[in-house]
Structure formats: structure tokens, C-alpha cells
Amino acid sequence: MKNHDDEIIISYFLKGGVMISVSFLVLGVILMFVQNGGDGFTLSQMSSYRYALNHGIDSKAVPLTGLFTGLESLDGLYFITFGLWTLIFTPITVVFIGWISFLSDKNYRYVIMATIVLFNLLFAMLIIPRFIA
Image (tube, rainbow, N blue to C red):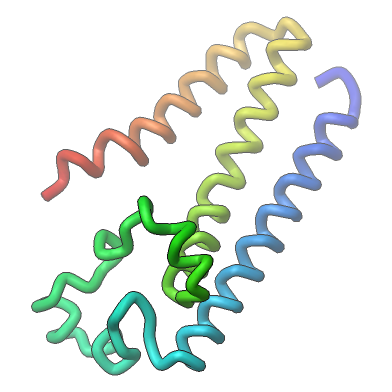
């Protein structure tokens, strides 16, 4: 990184990502308490370990394909899910910005390292969960 512009951009992405994430998380919690649940489950069902275990209520139960539909219907569980995904993708975006910066600076050693980090992150998020039962 030749100048501090990249650091400023990265700091804005980190701050913005965290603020957006926290906003969606807080709004989701408020909506879940106002509506007494989310995605067809009540708060008491979601908080009961035995019920949740027997009915498959976990992070796999929230389909990402219906994320925007859930947001449109003001379902608190989907707001929380979106907030968590925003929080997850914030550092990935920062690594990608660093990769672009290293590439523009022709610092190929760090381009290779950032590529490996991006590959590891995406592999761990998209490929490995398919093999876990």
C-alpha cells in the first residue's frame, strides 16, 4: 500500500459493515420479541433445547434462498441472519480490497497470500459445510 487511501477505505468498510450488521441484528431481535418468534416458530419453541433439537431449529433451518422474502415480510429471524452474514462478509471484503491494492502496487507476494486467504475463507464457507452431516 503506497498511501493511506487504502487504509481509509478499509476502515470505512469495517465501520460500515459492523454498523449495518448491528443494526440488522438489533432490529431482528426487536421484531422477534414484538412478533413472538420468527419463521413460523414461537420464542418459547426456539428457546426450548429439546423442542429445537427434535424439530431441527438451528442455523441450517434458515434458508438463504428466502432471505429477501423474509426481509420483506419483516421476519426478525431473517433480519438476524442478514446481520450475521453482513458481519461474516465484512472482513472478506477487506481482504478483497487488500488484494486489489496489492495487485495495483504490483506486490505479487501479498497478492498470492491474499488469494490463498480468500480461497481458504470461501472454501471453508461454501464447500466444507456440504460435507458435514
